[in-house]
Length: 84
Picture 1: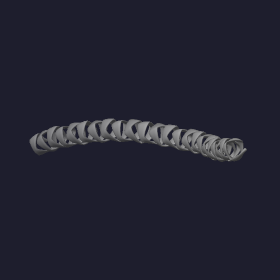
Picture 2: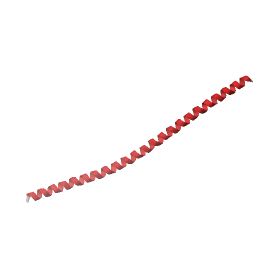
Picture 3: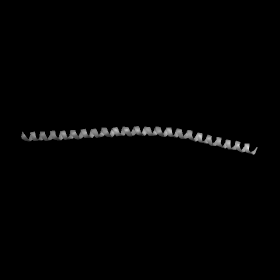
Picture 4: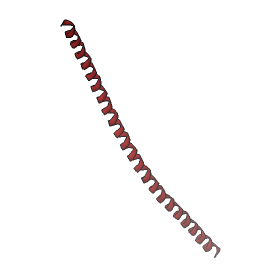
């Protein structure tokens, strides 16, 4: 009889352990999904920031080209003005 009680107690303890593990696993899956969502959001923001930086570089390059053209035009005008 003691053996049956002992086996029943062990079965109950294992059931408790399994319930704990199942609950913990479920919580971990929820936490993982939440963190994966946050990672995806951050990766998207990083990608947007990289595009913005590329746009800014393009804009700065265009501005430098424009400034160079204006300087060249000003120099030509000054030379022509000096001739008159």
